[in-house]
Structure formats: C-alpha cells, structure tokens
Image (cartoon, rainbow, N blue to C red; front, side, top):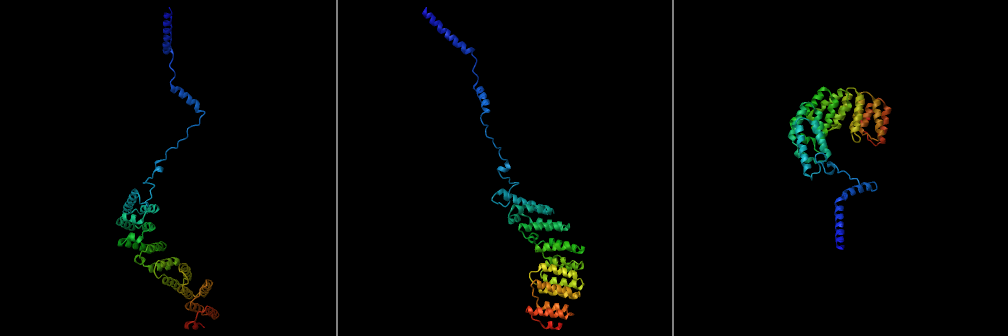
Amino acid sequence: MRAVLLIHSSFSSSSTSSSSSVISPQAPAPHHYGHRNYLTAKSSLPGPPSVQPPPPISASRPNYLSTHQWGDLSSPPLALDLVSASEVASRTAEDGRLEELSAILDRVIESGAEASLFMTALNIDSVERGFSQVLMEGKLWSFIEALKRFEKLGVEPLKVVGVDVDVVNLVGRECRRLLECGDMRELVQVMETLSGFQFPIKELVKPSEVIRVCIDQQCPVLAVRCACTLPHAQIIFCSLMKEFGRKGDLVSALKAYEAVKQTIIGPNMFVYRTIIDVCGLCENYKKSRYIYEDLLDQKVTPNIYVFNSFMNVNVHDLNYILHIYNDMQKMNVKADIASYKYF
C-alpha cells in the first residue's frame, strides 16, 4: 500500500512539472528587456558625443585643377598644367585674342611659375602671327597690353617680338597713323611705352616730326615727353624751347622749361642758358630775372655763359648788369671777353 502511494506521488509530481512546462508562457525575449532599459536610461545618461562630418574632398586633398600652384614643379600634374597653359596661350594668341592671352599670362604670373619653363613651351611663332593680326586690325593697345604682361612675367618684350620685321613695321604704321591724325597725346604715350620695351623709336616714327607737331599744337609738355624717349634728350630740350621762342610763344617755352626741370638730374647750364635766350627772343627781360632769382634760390651757381646770357637780355639796364657782375664776383665766376661788351 505504501509503495502504491509513493508511485502515485512521483507520478503526480512529474505530471505537474510537465504541465507547468507546457502551460506556462515563455519568458520575454531578452532584447525586450534591453529595449525597455535603454529607454529608461536614455533620459538619465548623457547623449553620445556628436560626430563631425567628414571634410569635403576639396579640403581633404588638393585639387590640381583649381588650387594648384604652377610654380611648384615637384609635382608632375603641376608641370603638366603649366605646359597646358602654354599651349592654350599659343592657340589664343594665334587666333588674335590678345585680351584672353593677357588673362592667361596674369594667371601664370600669380601662380609664381618660372618664366623660362612657360616660355619654353610657348609657341612664339603663333604669338607673332597673333600680334601681326591684331596690329593689322589697328588694335595697337591690345598688343601693348600683352607685352606688358610678358614684361611682368620677367620676359623682355622685344624678345617676344623677336626678329619679326612684319610686327615692327606694323607698329610703325600705327604710330604714323596717329601722327597723321594729330593724336599726339596717344602717340607720345605709345612712344613712351615702347621706349620702355627697348623698341627702336626712330625706326617706328620720325621723332622730329612728332616734336614739330607738338610745337605747332602748342603742346610743350608732350614735346618734352617725346624728347625723353630719345638719346641726347638734353640737346632736344634746348632745340624745342628755342623753337617755341622763334614762334614768339614764351608761355609754351616756359612750360617746356618747367617740364624739363622735372626730368633732368642736377643743374643743367645748357637748359638755363637756352631759356634765358628765349626770353630775349620774346623781348621779355622780366621773365629772365625771375629765372635768375629762382636759380639763386635753388643754390645754383650759373657758369659764365649763363651770366653772359642774363646780361645780354638785360643790356638796356646798366644797373642790373652791374648787379649781375657783382654776383659773379661773389660766386668766384671769372668774366670772359664777351662779358665786358655789356658795360
């Protein structure tokens, strides 16, 4: 009987255990508990650190198409780009688009590229053909502006033109056209610029003709500027002042004298003597006295030839001549034979 009870008790426990395992619901999946815990902790824990977005491509690595420096020749793409720029410049010049050529040269200048490398890749023949084209079209200043860029790049403009006689002849033709039109202001400006480029001015236009027209138009400052582009300018200064004097135009002669004073370095006795002689030609002795006093104010000691010119212009006034003679003695300037004829 006791054995039967033990068997029954064991069976009941076994049944209950199996029933419990079948009937009891499954425990929630662990991830549900994790989700609830994350929501609960989210309000109490600090948020994750913000993550910076990756830098743009252009900032993380160099863009050789837009941010390169042509002067850095250690990188093959840069050297290749410099050659490409030379090729584009050659084609642009040959097409006569010198404004675009100037823009390309500006970019090369800003990049700090070596002029020799750029010029080696540049097709000079194409550039010369482009120069000839624009000059035939009368675009003289486009030609000049392009040469200015080459000069800024460190290349002598005359070397860019080379031995192309056609280009030089076309430049001369444009200069002569300006002379015939009487546009002296532009012509003198062109002459000054080309002279700075070491162009042979005398082969482009006759300077004497330019100065003559400037005198006829009563443009003394332009005449002086034209003379400055030529060798032996000081002799030309004296000649043009005398020419104004022969025409009785003392005002223009004095303006030329003031312009000359701004260009010469140090005292120039030839210029002083010439302007005083011009005062005599124009029969204006008072102006000569102003000039004399101005020289003394500048601590300039005239030579005997300048003193003789002063006395010649004021020959009618013996008292003033004696005054000048006394100044000569104070300055230790010895009189010559010509000096005594005024007494």
